Image 1: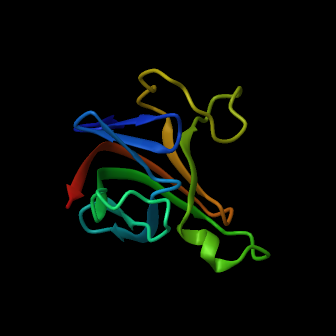
Image 2: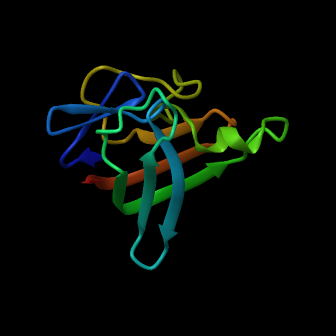
Length: 139
């Protein structure tokens, strides 16, 4: 998948216009929208409300993923509180290759055949295979 206007860093940071946004600590995941008709997925985060969150952060980060060829949602751990559903634990990659055993991270350009994996503190995981993605930062 091609990240058209952003990149990932250290499995929790989304980098846009040379600014890194900490999706684990500073933003709460609020929505996933899978539109079958146009093969797209939208993921949304809002700025968190914790006293550690820099209030100069944008209010909303929207990740628009297009030409989706694979979409999976793995269930959350039912023993975890629902408050953990909004906290991204890590972003990484998934591969069908024999060497891959779950989510992994590389600090280089990923192989285009790798799927994107978003794991949340609740254990839920979103896995997406697509052609491209673009981010919108809304102040």
